[in-house]
Length: 329
Image (tube, rainbow, N blue to C red; front, side):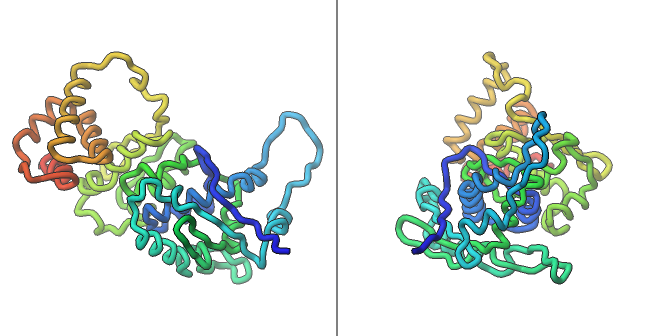
C-alpha cells in the first residue's frame, strides 16, 4: 500500500521561517513567484514546525522527551523525500502570472546551487536543490523535497513569523529579503551601520546603485512603502556620517493610525494622490511610494517641486522615477 504523505497549503495569516532559512532568503535572489511558492510550502508544514517549538511552562513537569526530527520524518517519509501539492489558484489567484514564468521558477528552484546546507561529514557546506521533480497540470503543481532540506525548514530553535500575503502585495522582491535581514535586529529596536556594510550584508554589489541617493530611491523607499502598507513591522531610516540608522516599529501601534480627523495636509495629499493616480496611470505600489514622499516632505513642499515639471507623457513607474530624479536636484 502506498503511504506517501502529501503536504498541501492551509489557509493561514502567518507562516514560520527558521533562522537557517532566513539566512538563505537574504542571500538568494528570489523572484516573486519563488517567494510565493516558499510561503505556500511554509504554510503546508506549519503544523509540523509547531512540534519542534519548545514551549516553556511555569510548572516543572520533569524531564520531557522532545520529538526528534527523525522520529517525525519516519512517519511520513517516502524514500527520503516528502511530496507537495500546490494549487495554482493559491499561487496565482488573479491569473496575472504567465504559466511559462511559473514553470521557469520551478525549474530554477531545482537547480543544485539554489540552496547551501551545512555538511558535517566534510565540516563545510554542500549545494542542493530546494525542490525535486516538479510537475504540473491545469490545477496543481507537484514536487518533492529532500529530507535534508525539510530538516532545514523544521529547525525551530530560532524562528520568525512572516505574513503569508506579503509576497502577494509587495511591489519588489527586495521587500522580503530586506525584512528577513532587519528582523535579526528587532530585539535591539534597530541598528546603525556603515553604508558599505549594509550593502555587504544584503549581498548587494557596491556598484549596483549609482550613489547612496539612488540606493534610497530605488531600494529603501519602495521597501518602506510596502512594509508600511502590508506588514506588521516596518522601519524608519536616517543617514549621518556615512552610516545608516534603522529604527524598527510596529505598524499597528504607530501614532495616528486610528485618528478620526485628518489635517489639511492629509486631505491635500489624498486629493493629489487620487488625481495623479488617474492621470499618470499609477498602480497601488507606485501610489504607496508617492504617498510616502508626500508624508515625508509635506504636501506644499513636494507639490511645489514637481508641479508642471514632469512631461505629461510619463506614466506609471516612469513618472515615479522622474519625481525621484527631480528631488535629487
